[in-house]
Image 1 (cartoon, rainbow, N blue to C red):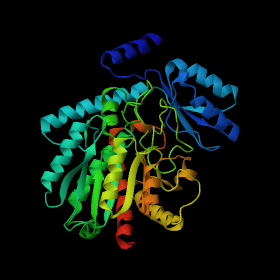
Image 2: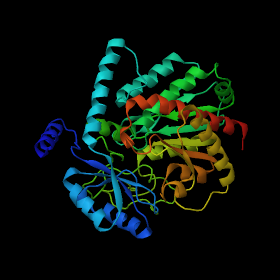
Image 3: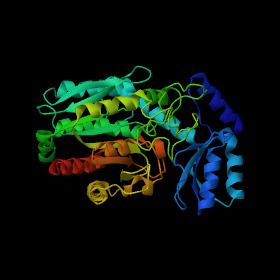
Image 4: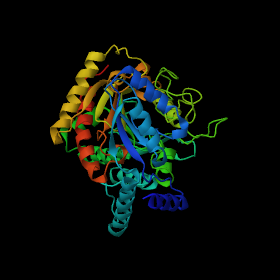
Length: 419
């Protein structure tokens, strides 16, 4: 077994890919505040190279941790010695990564032979950008492409604008993929872009929304990180900016917004996956969205799509105080997720970020809400941990279809409640 794991590591290294042979994802269930504190201490142990898929928050809330094979025994001994319950959620991370890669390779061959795009597959960035161009070409009267900036590594930040005309109309903003490894979000956003274009003139709800409002959709909010997750490290989360004075690279772009920046739930350690960056809006990817929203001056809804956990949330994350529009926002997410559940029975949990997952400062929808965009929401798509960030491609379309019902319900509400 050890020989096979070593061989896998060497093969991966030869191709420049980080491998996860023998890594496991443990689901840990702290039962009290002391155990939560112990898990936070464990998170700070850089030598163990633990990757927290779900961060410690409250007692009885599951914490998902990817543990490198070489550290499995140490991690399990730590948990057992402190009587912290855990189970193995994913037996071998590399096996799932390999299966995903095989599916992608098969799909790419199939697409080349058919000369068509498969929305039910994961794609590299250049394929996503080409698909966006194809949507613009197919629906030129409705869809246009706007470049709102460039990433740290000079990749374009491409937004699709859906509009039936007019200037500075009320708008809905949707972004996905701010965390690179959450591949189902970029795929869902692209499917959604095609769905919006197809449904205008056919679906009365979509037609009505676009007759009165514009929609701006950014399918890949963190292109550098997304490319790196394909070429080097499937589990990469952050941007790829250089951190002055550190050997570590990247900032968590959803801890980098000017909303309680640097507060609880964000790390000052550049090597942490939740590193908030040297200053608010230090990341050009974040700054580009902020500048666009401020420049537009009439955005009425801000929706950010993440995975995983099956949640729909509203502010706040940087504080556990409820926003002034708490009751209305709660009604919206309940209606939206009820529509979502009606399709396949997928259950979502709803509420403010701080109470639903954990306190997290510097998040996008906290910034948008404080900026005055009342209808600010974040999705966490499928699943609840069985596959985590490695959701099989055969779940892309069902995920997108059910999410679409929630998005459409939300957009209709925003249309009917101007402010």
